[in-house]
Length: 162
Image 1 (cartoon, rainbow, N blue to C red):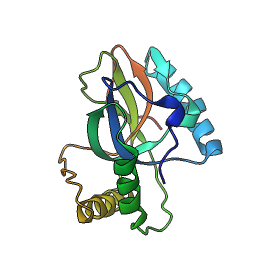
Image 2 (image 1 turned 90 degrees about the horizontal axis):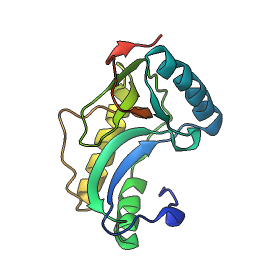
Image 3 (image 1 turned 90 degrees about the vertical axis):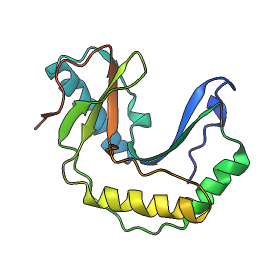
Image 4 (image 1 turned 60 degrees about the vertical axis):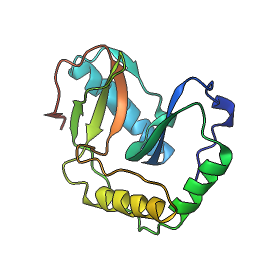
């Protein structure tokens, strides 16, 4: 299902990312948000925390383009992903860390050591997109994650949070 972003149309020269994501139910997202504030404080992360209503687990990056993709392309992506049938899964995010980015702010993320079901979903989504003609590269270094905050610099990375 496509996320309705018509009210947030980026300008044609702004880079935008398209990706497959898992969104927690709002009560769960609110819990993540509350715990993320304490985690950021504990890890001495000074930066802007993401609002609860945008929290998601990035499962599969599809690509980066300038501006918003045309609706016809977004509908093709949605049709491809609609072919994926997957049972409900439990996701445990029990590690915190960061990764390098070209942006000025560094993402502070939650990850999980046992994300077998998320990886299976990633592969199913990638295969469905490929069937519909989208060449989604397999990134050996990619890790599903939930970005909870952005900071100028992360002092500690890849430590267990509970």
